[in-house]
Length: 313
Image 1 (tube, rainbow, N blue to C red):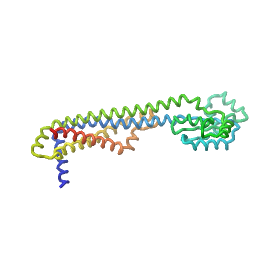
Image 2: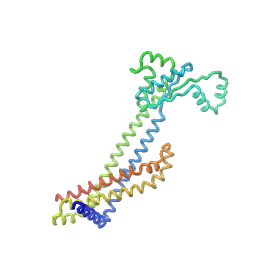
Image 3: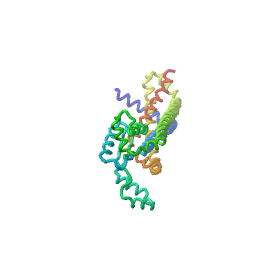
Image 4: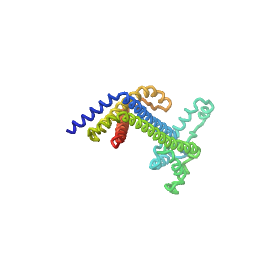
């Protein structure tokens, strides 16, 4: 019995959809625009997150050691750093590797190459490259290395000063602080824009669906006169809302396919290896799920609220 009623509601909804197909297609068109905005916001947030992550990964601080510092002492300090909650990664660069890297950077400079060849000893010390979990945490790490931290005992502070030549945080402090501010502001602006555009898209779609149901107000009045229940009156319009959401989400995904395919290589060159089409392809089901759920919820809620106005009349 219940199944029969559900079938009738879906059949009535499908009939209404096709009978008012001009209005239905207009509603779907507006819904596609709204879902396209939602989908674009998904891609924009992914691109923003990827870009900010790349910026964060490019920031680090380096600890340069005196040439007489022993490798066991340096590795002991490396181990202490890795135990800090703020530290994400510590890479050790030996004296030999530091010299090799220096030669490679200046291989086109004949004067420097000749000067290095004339030296009997390696003039460069070992180094540690440190990456923090968050750029705002470099200050705390630098204070630890400088012995100005409650986590460092007086003996450790003295030990650090003996083997450490310099920490380049102070030279990079302005850049790091500026990056922290940019990342924070970008995330806040991105969130604000996302919410604003999503609300606008939802309001436009909601009003379009209300207008579509307005054209059926006489039909609703007749159904009420013959004693139809509220569920029987509301059901077909809710089904129409579901159909609108299904078709709009499918069309939107179809639009995104060639668009991301075209933008993929361009985004990869501009955003440092991030390919928009690869993301679309690998996250197809999750993106479609977001659009489908948004479209159906938008259609169903808008239809239910709009019909309620006429049920109260």
